[in-house]
Length: 215
Image 1 (tube, rainbow, N blue to C red):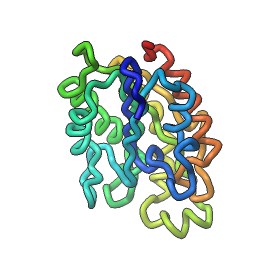
Image 2 (image 1 turned 90 degrees about the vertical axis):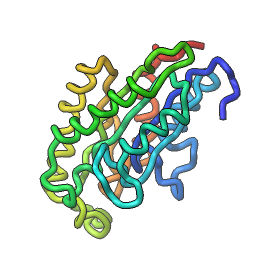
Image 3 (image 1 turned 120 degrees about the horizontal axis):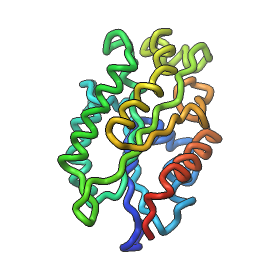
């Protein structure tokens, strides 16, 4: 917890690539921790990642990200900024034919939730950054063992098509946009950001939101 009362409060909301592999990556190695280190006491970075979280699709064990997003916003208010990186888990075969447009549609509801529920200390709507996820890389031994039943070749192809759709959503909602795939990539399992990618992503996000910091 950052105890600077003037720190910019930023919620980082995502799936396992925001949660980070905590058995391998220390808190200072995950992109949220990298971001915290760069911004220091000027920001309070709130890490809200959950493995297998979707945008708005029902899955087991409360993985529907939108359902939890409303109470999450209320719990962490006041918020100066919100970073959302979701979409990969929507591409699982269990949810039907994968579609980049469907992912963007699921994320659209987040802008509505923020307008309704999130406020900064001045009573204004927080700033938002949509981060398009990294691309899925199939064919690795670990991927084939762990994830081949969940993600088809179509899922892999659509993961590389998410950025333009999410960028459009960001533009129409007056939000910032960053394509994580331009700075980070998957590790050996083909799905999760590798250590160097976490560092690069944290640095890229810090540059993107530099105007948010008000201390």
